[in-house]
Length: 324
Image 1: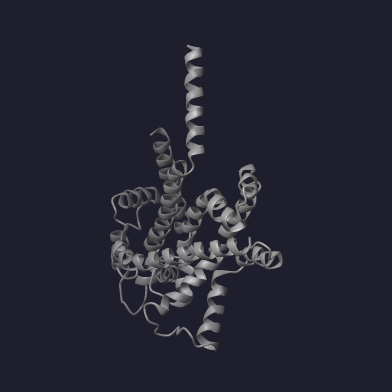
Image 2: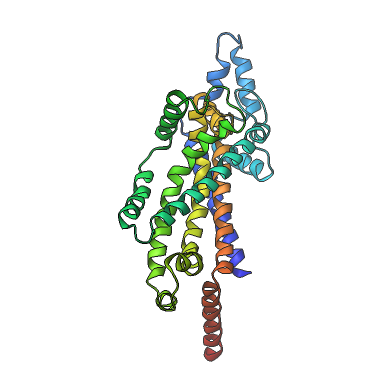
């Protein structure tokens, strides 16, 4: 329980720091979104009316008061109102978050499958040259920018091969290329860790014992190595899933999908700070929650870690007893 409470406290501190940094940076942006919108000559608003609108939005209050008001609102689930549309930010997020989470989840599943496939092909018994080619793929995938990969996939599969339409695609067809765009860069570090973990586990003494008993390469890889090699990649998988939200923003912009990416792009161009602050905190929350779940599940998946912690706690108690 002490470990859980400590991790929860760290997660809360990270979210508070993310909110504070985002608030300060957004306030430091040049320009004033309210003035950009309401000083438009087509609206015909007088200076007194513009001043009244600034009071209504709380833009005339000191920054510390705005910070406390925004923080209390976020804690209560109130993200404010969009400066450009006047719509509650919570309503705007509720409309686009499900699509982004679907894209990120499917991209993560595809990345895991791709990483596992590369790892298996990189350990092909008897085919060392082909295996070396697949061992080099993760380094190549890491260097591929998301936006560039999306454009290349559109050019190849939509315009050249005409296999997947990019204009008015179906619900399934519209997900294929975005999922590939997300999966390829994310699968690279996961595959690197899996390959390295497999190589490490293959050098353990128990593998030599199993091999001496007559087990074949595939049996050793699937029955003895896989479970031990997956654990180090589990933590990285949680980190990568948190990063998928940021990758989804770029991907949705490239493919013109309605989601958090499109909403963020519009908010940046219009300097709609309430939306930007909510998007930053949403991304940080997803990242922190996923990593918190991974940290709490890791001792369950790896009994050695739990035993080590129990041993440390027991030694600490014995030292206290001796000191008394």
